[in-house]
Image (cartoon, rainbow, N blue to C red; front, side, top):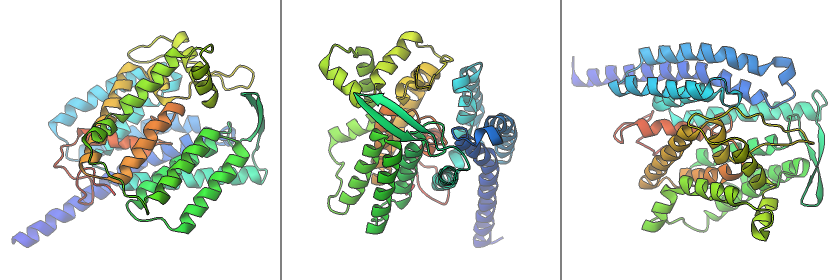
Length: 399
């Protein structure tokens, strides 16, 4: 057989393997993803998404096992997979708030040979479809559009749920979609029309939900995207590279320190707490009630208006609910990812990940795949730098 024919045969085999891997992974992930997207909506009593999730995790494991058998796995995989499954199972066992952790870790590791751009794009499409369907249903009166009155900092706020069980879900999904769209656009400049549409959506969502911090983050992100046309981003400074590499541990430490040190008698900390809608107070209460453990603690969160108790910060939430092992594995993995992104000068992905590091201080979605498909990047920390990631894209050059 000639060399050219041999190369063509090998390339065709690779394409078939990639398509089969993508297909099996898609069967395991996307139905599970869509079910989770419905859990926070008023459709949950009609379609029972939690029941679908429980069933699909077993079905999905079968597809992932087929993917593992038909794929090309190294000896390292045979060692890492049992460890990941064991940690995930221990964390998820008898812990309602972390029941998805085992399956999440399995999905993340199984995604290491899946084209990352496809994961982000398909996740974004699912988010847009479900959120658009839910919001539209609430406007048409098919499902409730609950009005909630909340009191914070001496101000009464009128907030609509837009078909979701809590008012912050719509703006948080919007911010996730916006970050994903920023990544998918890459280094391409945005048109004025794209910016205006996103700005108007941000304003309209804020008007109905009055979710201030998410509105500010989305506005700042859009402002940075606009300024990229005028100002170039320079990350050549050595100190800045170190700072950005460790941005996740740094933000986690700042959040933990402020939470632990919070004292209502301290005027500065009290001001920060009010600006963060009582996040420091609830975080401190969570750490007081539930001592840190290696594999997390089952926490009974309460989102009712009269007895509200929920820890919004991803860093504190992960520490309490999933335990210190998952917490440090997450921070270490993201630090490795940041280092690779900086080395490869992927500025768009860098911006997105910086925003997620800040967002994790105030919102609980860092470890939730239905909000954050960039969690799949953790799988890339298991790859060698010389390995490609789908479609002949070199390591971390996934624009």
